Length: 491
Image (cartoon, rainbow, N blue to C red; front, side):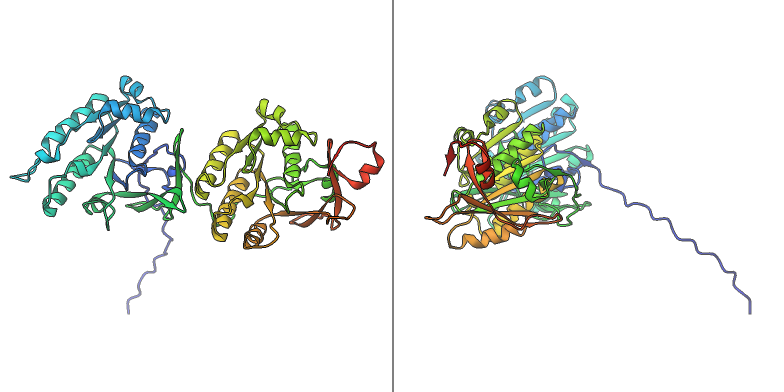
């Protein structure tokens, strides 16, 4: 029998799969969850109910693009150029200047629904001519159509509607223009016509919901052809700086850990941690009943950070900045001085002002702006409107965010005498690296306040309970009081 020659098999070289070209929107957080932004040269549909931020998304897409040297066209069917300029001025956007510099063109197309009749062939040629002229006038690479319902308001034939939608989208694709089209949400569909989402390459749903009189905005990527993307609902906020999307934190726990130690700001408390204090970038919970000096111990920690030349950020949910700094002066801490020097920022807000996601998004923005090394949240127990799971999720995401930026987080928490809030406290404490428990001396007994360390992962720590008092020189243990001259004390 003839023998077959054996060929040596060599493994094939693996080539990386081609990646979809994308255009960065410049919207904070959005480009992260989409892996780079919107599909380049393709249409993207932004849909949602009234007041959810569709128009603002489109405008910010163009404004951020203009800052990168990519001119854009905003086609509006509802607002005139004058009204649009006025409406976005409150957010700090000077689009009139961008128009003057040929970085933005606003094309107002007036459509009266009463004048539209479905007779003969529906023709978009007039619209195409106007769009083409606007694109050429500034060499635009981006375009926003706001809103698509206005174009096809008079059409009732779904076959004609689908054909014209495909024709419009194909016209935009041929020119390689990255397009954002806004659409109003339908009753049981993403849009009123229920067709736009099928011919779009990327569909993003914006939602504005109200639960227990607290509003929350959320974003979800419904589909993204040719690209992986986040599939969760992402909270986002709209404030004076525009839009910001808050990505869900990673579940892989990939943040690094350091052995560096930083002072608690209280010498005797440092001794309880071997004379070195907390691990940097760790999470610390200070819990106790009312009046146990939780806020004071946290304030000492911020003061120590500022003394080291590091920035500190405090989220205060019970006192105004003026009241907070005044109260800390009574224990010898001049936080006002650090505020004036720009070393400390105090963000004060009522916890019921907005939802948990909005609070979390605000914290993200402040941390990115201030770039602190330490953050204090005082107190977590203020978020009584959230359920056990919601508060746990918020704290976990905040801790993960801070650890990823090498920031040490200190959280205070009020332990109530009884009630369901105990469950929230137990759940939160399991997320912490270090847990300090503060207690008051029972009425009628001698002594001040008591501190014990319930846990501190990765380091030796004292198992004893220290008794201390608050004086005009700060938190002082009882043993130091007998060795020093008498001073004013706070009970």
